[in-house]
Amino acid sequence: MTTIPAASTASVPTPARRDFLPFAPPLIGEEEIAEVVDTLRSSWITTGPKTKRFEQEFAAYIGATGALALNSCTAGLHTALVTLGIGPGAEVITTPTTFAASVNVIEHVGARPVLVDVEPDTLNIDAALVAAAITPRTRAILPVHYAGHPADLDRIGELAAAHRLAVIEDAAHAVAAKHRGRLIGAGDNPVAFSFYATKNLTTAEGGMLTGDAAFLDRARIVSLHGMSRDAWKRYDKGGSWFYEIVVPGFKYNMTDIQAALGLWQLRKLAGFQERRRAVVRMYDAAFAPEDALELPARRPEVEHAWHLYVLRLVPGVLRIDRDGFVEELRQRNIGTSVHFIPIHLHPYYRDKYRYQPDSFPVANSNYQRMLSLPLSAGLSDADARDVIEAVLDVVRRHRR
Ligand SMILES: *Cc1c(COP(=O)(O)O)cnc(C)c1O
Image 1: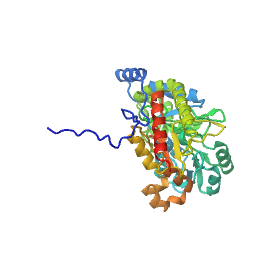
Image 2 (image 1 turned 90 degrees about the vertical axis):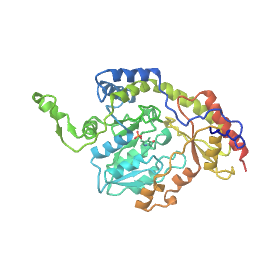
Image 3 (image 1 turned 120 degrees about the vertical axis):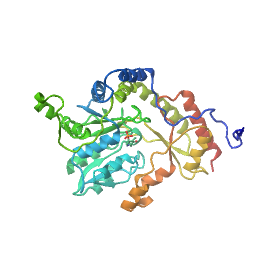
Image 4 (image 1 turned 120 degrees about the horizontal axis):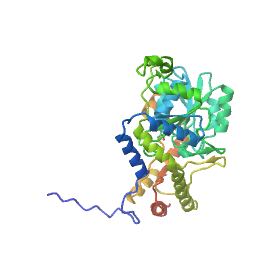
């Protein structure tokens, strides 16, 4: 028999939670489970009535003219680029401070991603730098509403109008976020949401694309093999077996199993957001007095979706760096993450476009000192207090 050695407690600082607090667990209730079971017991398990209802209820919630349910946000961004005819020879201006999917899709269509640096406070794409990066080949601007704080849509919209560019918003973090009182996704331009497991509203995997009606009609075809639905109408005597491929499209549809989750998650979203804001208020109150910590920015014209609570370590105050801070929290059973490793540091992009770490100094320097604290609708006050206690303990012990 092997004996399992007792865990060493020598290096475990107090206070530490007894169980590990995950960074962002999903919050799935009995309603979601029952709805999924109902779908599984029905005769329709893939794209069908529940997906249609989810699209309608999501569009109604956002105030969008319509919505297209897909199997991911990545699929939504890719579908938007293809639908707008953006391909080889085109340039799309986007941010280095994002998940790789936002930029990978630009490569997928054969266009060139043009990265510009971010604003020091919000870490959203810097509209002044967007202006300077526009060329005759630019077709679109792809802002990411980082952490749930909307990007500067006023100035981005002005630039797009002046140069006849599309604006494709990566709203993976921004369901329920508002810009000047209007929910993200309520406009006419393409906006892609994510319902990935860690996001504010989840279908395990899933996404939604909003935009104007004509765009969504075409996007729907692109996202499902390029099968024309109009063909069904034109040949109604031919029966339901008839279809025509009008473009080599993709297989990006959402299933009714996912939509079953989404229907209930959407109904609970307001409550989820209220809970996130309550945790944020606790974090803000506890961390604001600490000179070692820089709190997340928020601008007066936005309502933050609080997908992420990103702390930044103020340089020179602590003896440990971000990696040390993450490790100290892990030893106290607090899970964290880092959003994001900037695009230009990933080998594919670094090598293809010959980037240096300081090609985007704001993105790079903030990456070095950022960490995302646990934030989810399932976090209790006691959980949040554990996070606060652990963070403050690390700060106290490692002050210079
Ligand atoms: C999660 C995420 C995505 C990708 O979403 P999927 O639904 O997993 O495809 C895209 N962009 C950002 C900024 C994200 O955080």
